[in-house]
Image 1 (cartoon, rainbow, N blue to C red):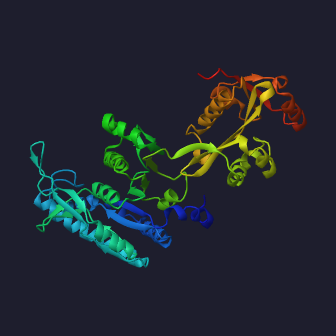
Image 2 (tube, rainbow, N blue to C red):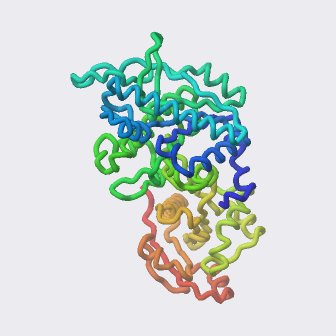
Image 3 (tube, one colour):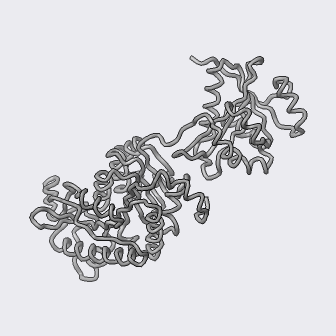
Length: 429
């Protein structure tokens, strides 16, 4: 999707309108030259009636201040001991960053307000060590945040918490973002970091079910780069707390926020709390999507051209693979009951979702359907992707003589000289 394509953006508006997004921005991103573009993206979200809460970190600014003032900071990110000197650095750094954020939002004609919505208490003694001025979120002042959001104001939350006695604590911004997302029942929590997303053993995770992430976090967290372990843990915690979608995006990527929110492939990592992908029967409204999906394959002569009328006539044979309600792949199963054969056809995966195993899932789905119908054999005709079916699908090469008579006639008239592949099906159960 081109970000300049207004229709592409508008298709998401009904599901996001009046919903709440928590934008958690690392301190290093606030001071990055791309932060102005992120605030422009926030303006776009607000123009679409999406409610935005902005939570920011301060670790990088604390580190810079400590170096400048020649103070030894006891901890930078609010996850360890915060001594009195580090608390002062944290307050100074947070106030400065909050001011820069408010200034930037004002430049985009957005009303915003810094809040003391995080009620915190002293973390206390952990493993025998007093955490001093490090705090833990006790509760979120939902009424305050909702009042601001209802007035079209963007709440800005610093990485600080306050107790009833007027004391201030340094609180980890990731934990604040999760607490705010849970309290406000946010639709999305979006972490803006200096990384492209979560990498595990060097491989970028594009999307992952929260239960799978929890397993990695609990048993093999060493696979994540150290600076992203907190994001992995808090993404899992947010989904477990009821946030359906957590995104981890590179905040230095121009238009990265919009690309993540308004395209089904995204650019970073998506952690989801329920199955956000599914295979379902095609509906009349999907005919255009099927034609759009297969357009490039038809032009490249990978797939045979099918008119809208032809697809409509055989619509019951088609299935859609969708991610967050967006069609990204399709397949068809044409049945020849007299010969107990089925044809797997029109298999296509959008290039933005290649190498994610979707093709194999669709092949397996069609195989299972064919077995349920009592078919004995599955056939495929292919001009360019036959090696995929041979290596990944378990098909073997055959001859046109093995085609059902009705299909053989179409084969002879097409002139495509497709390879014929077959797979014998064992009865289910």
